[in-house]
Image (cartoon, rainbow, N blue to C red; front, side, top):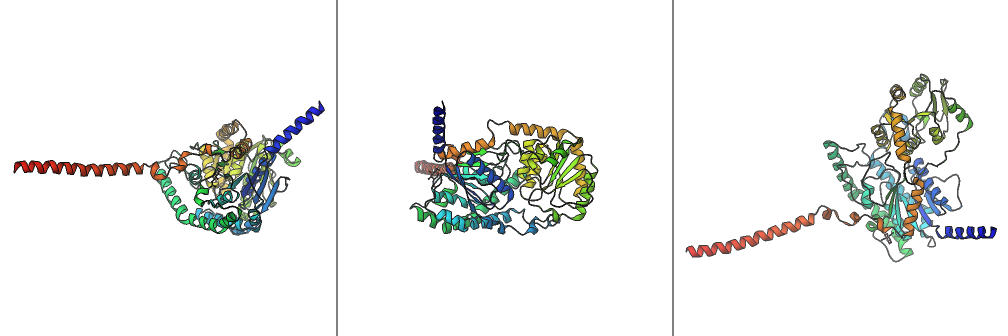
Length: 519
Ligand SMILES: *[C@@H]1O[C@H](CO)[C@@H](O)[C@H](O)[C@H]1NC(C)=O
């Protein structure tokens, strides 16, 4: 019996061995939430038995033996100075980091730095390195598609947000702006006449910017940095435009419960929530007790990891404390500094296990900056929110949460304490926000397989089927003039013109003959 068991184990082990693939994960954006998503990808792939080489700006605390880190932490220096994330500056309208043009150029610089980084150069010039697939995070440009040219293997895009037209165009086609919204817009279909026109306008402007501003830089980076490396490995140098449109899969960190029911090709896989582990970590003892004993429930307040509390204006801090003190609920405020004269119901913690707090049944409200990870977690655990967006996609996320009916929005301002007081009152008094988030949470959880499993399945599927060409949308192959039937219109036009001349000719023959008769 023991022999048989050992034999079985051996067979299983060899089976696992056969199915172990080597992935290159390119996730070098120097932002904490991007790193959380990147690490979760690594973890899921490694736990499924695969090897991962991970290009990242943040070195994970715990390293699995099947993970190789390619350190690009130099990228962190590229970020705009602290000033940009200074909350007072943002309140006074002095920040620039929300502009798409600024982000696009920042990301282009980060892409170039990443590829030129000595550690990445060492990896790509090493001719013994091979991969079964490259997975790369998309961030405002497509230069990383060049990695697929180097390693001559299938390529997978990862998007930290819901698919938008720039991504859909890479795997399918531009979606119709009459019922889809661009990445930076917080409009939600159904759109009014004005909104439809604005969406059309921003798609056209965006497309022109991509073609005339971004594309040139991408080609430059590809030709200067990727092509020499590719030449050194094999004779075949693919065209950059071919690589750009050659992705096998688009993994999207989104889910219908939080987004819009968009038309998607079969190779777009939505895995929103994959970063959340099935079993939530237990709370530290003091927090556990605090939350267990909160008779009136717990309000959890956190502005995420990027904003520094020290930059909060003193009068706002004081007013927030006073305001929280008026409620009978227990307040857990994640803040990097202790504040004097805190009311007895307010507990300031330097570090907070966010998921464990949201998972506690007494957590009744989450006051958040509305980052996508926080939004996903709040839907996962079913807690209504008050969103105070600060930059980036937070505005869109909060606008959607409000429209979905589980959140209220408060502007970041010097008077935010009094606005927040009204919003908290509304959510505590009216159960509709909680009812709605519970409904969405049910939709979120009601999937045939958990998102992390789905992620692993499709990423393996790409390797097993050598690029999953069967999943690709035929729309990708059809040029825009064919989709609009411009060629048909031209053919009809030519026929009409020819017919016109034929008739004119026939007419002139008949007419002259008659004339002759008359004469
Ligand atoms: C495009 O992708 C397929 C499937 O991954 C691959 O076989 C092919 O070589 C790729 N084309 C280029 C030019 O890299």
